[in-house]
Length: 357
Figure: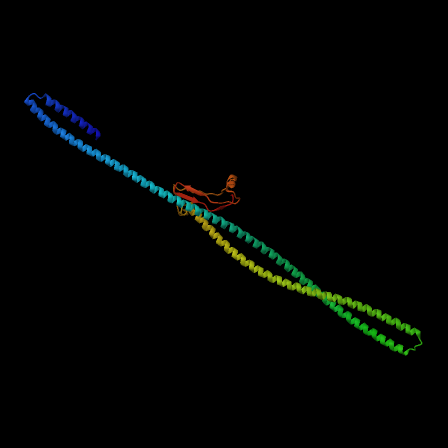
């Protein structure tokens, strides 16, 4: 438009120069009339050129204004888009931070649950060990009870024998005492009939009395020893009775301990089941975070499905972590899962894996 405007101005100047030259060089009337006609024509053409020039100038001004307005609109739109992008980036960063915090909390809860699970398993193992030790104590106590019962039976048999022997000895002692007393009475009666002048008779009576006293003392000593044995057996019997009472009390306490241990075992099993469910839930939440709030898509094919040309299936039979990987993880029994990305829109994960292989 500017070039056209400049060319039109040049043409107007040329026409103006021609008009001036024609006006100066006109000598005849015919030429003057002709020149006047030409001048009129040129004036009309000049007027038309001026009108076109004016229109072109107005069009140019409009184009300039439109281009400025378009530039302003583009700048404004760019600023608005940039502001929207900034707001979206801030929101995404905020969501990302929240997801990181949530992931850290879930990971911490998962670690705490694993620690609690290990503690519960340790307590369960301790309960099992305690139950085994209690069972061993029960067996030992049962064995001791059997030994005590056997000892009591032997002692009762010995007591019966000693009681029978004691009874027989007492009977023999009483019989001998009666015989000796009867013999002494008879001797004393015979001695009353003997004259006092016979010295040999007195001597014999004295010897017999000494002999009887010796037998009586001997039987008294035997009877005393037997009484001591009898008292010892009674004391042993009382001790055995106390042992039996203690064994009965131990058996009762053992039964109560068994019942208490079984109740604890049931509670621990229930708690372990609840912890397992919480761990599975946390694993699913971790997978959900890994999938960006989307659940994993199962790629298990049934026998009825046909394999298409663009499908791919991976069978992982064994996964071994290297020594460098174990060193970077920093634990002997890591808990990991694999995330395999197919193209840019599908992500598959494996279940949670324990250990280095």
